Image (cartoon, rainbow, N blue to C red):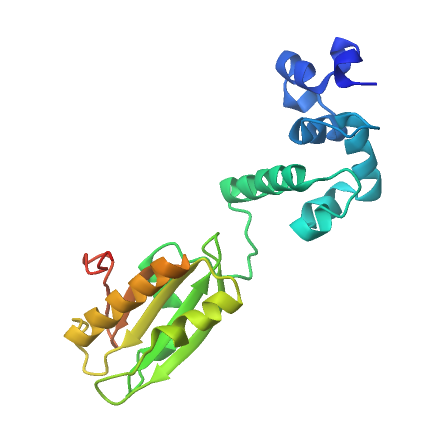
Length: 225
């Protein structure tokens, strides 16, 4: 039976409008996201079938490749469901409490405290996902007392490999002066341009000393390509 043939009080959208989301069953809510069913099942029947196979908690943990293997779930339905789940997670800030979230320069600095006392320059990259969670940290190079050698491929190879959305880079100045050098500004420009080509944002370049730090973003030194 098609949705339009159901009694009005059983049609998910009409029930939602009249009584609110809280009045709908899980199957009816899922049916609204699916919008349409299949040739053999309407959206509510499809939602019932999916929820019988995958209880709510398990369904919310499925990824795209797993979802599209479910009979009746095409790319559009999978993308809609996963987008809704991700949107709610971001709105409620439901992140893994064991994964650091980098929302500001200080958050990044808190993950780099070991760099402050280094006697040589260490160049480190923090790799973030779309939720700004730090999913990887890697030392890219260790230089001399006053210089480090960095190539864009060494920074972005791990980012591509782990599907990072954003990168924060940082290095220390053993001299104690956080002011960026001309080479610091040049490498920042190179990395930002490389990131724009790859679709991976360079969010900031931090310079740390034993006592303080500087954010090149906050100082307006992230040059647009």
